[in-house]
Length: 465
Ligand SMILES: Cc1cc2nc3c(=O)[nH]c(=O)nc-3n(C[C@H](O)[C@H](O)[C@H](O)COP(=O)(O)OP(=O)(O)OC[C@H]3O[C@@H](n4cnc5c(N)ncnc54)[C@H](O)[C@@H]3O)c2cc1C
Image (cartoon, rainbow, N blue to C red; front, side, top):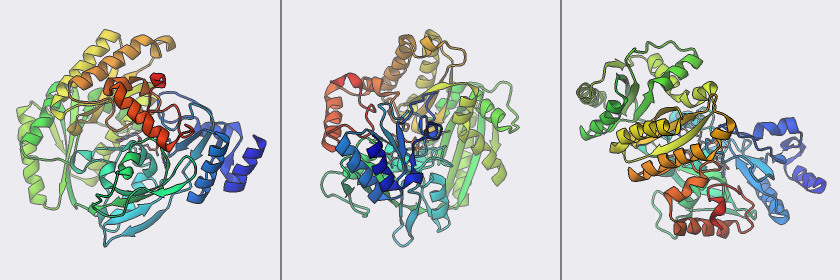
């Protein structure tokens, strides 16, 4: 082992091989529940050649490698659950090129989502995918999870903006997966196989994104409802009116209250409110946006919204978005939680929310729900609080979670909309896929990683054989 550590140091430099336990601790957890898996070593390569050399060494000695971005994942994907090393991409943090003429950009995977968005916006361009964690998550992690965010409802998810990827395979081979063109009908779509593969097939080392023109105007409104299910029904009705908002976020009042409380933000919550809808429209024509808002207001009235607040100033808009974006983090400040990233056909959102609450009553858990309602994507935070450990990780609660996922399937949905499967959801994959389907996935994994050294213990259920 000493000799191998020496070789990692030769590749990355001694400052970038983390040996001391107190320094490794930072890489032992992410945002998933309270899970901690200590890596045996952390290596932080500075470029693709160093990553390739690290992978060659690990391949030679059968050392397991867990790729890591910013560690904001909610499914435990970056945790070294089978030991071995964590390979952090934090030093690959350069925006290599913004090609205004072709509406494209090439970046390294350790660039923070928001840093990239701001850089392209300074050039009049727009990169829409905006996970609520955009201030900290890396673009490489976004690729690995095919991340979404509030704007996905109008602009799509990460996948819709990726043209080409440079990846390092588990044996150290460096490969480009496609081409930098807007169209590509050449062979298997390897680029898209890597997107959403959660670091199990290769390590993404460069990304070529397509960009669009930045819409200069947006309007934001917040509506309160005394009936959370009426808020859910409103969502589909807005689209049926012919409006495509750039965000439709549902927040149970408890979610918003916790976020505002821990952020120290004042907000006048109505006594009777059960849930809130945050709706944004954006575009190039301010008159059209006013028309859209008028149509949305009609729908809100028809579905019994209590109060509708138009955010007049940039500061008001920022405050509302800040409260929305911080919910996940602030619920965690209140209690450890299990996050179920449920997604169904949009019109079935009311059935999903009411079903989740019924299942909660049956299995004895409290949930705080919020999410990207325009996509039918509801984050169900199951709250631990004082729940004893044996119940928290026991079969009873797992059966409750299974029931939630069965409901998703019944409502035309699946078990994760944007947070991935990782470590914590893999045992439920049989709710989403047949055995044939899971074996196909396992076979694909074996083609890329026959030794099973890259991010083992993720995505594919352990008992598949
Ligand atoms: C408060 C909060 C809000 C969030 N909001 C959203 C949201 O709105 N939408 C959304 O989609 N997600 C959201 N997330 C989840 C999370 O931020 C995303 O999944 C994000 O994409 C993870 O990026 P990361 O850099 O933190 O990746 P990590 O957590 O470090 O890793 C995630 C996975 O990616 C793999 N990986 C990382 N880098 C690479 C690479 N270069 N090559 C190959 N594999 C790699 C890891 O092995 C792991 O499997 C939120 C999380 C938090 C804490």
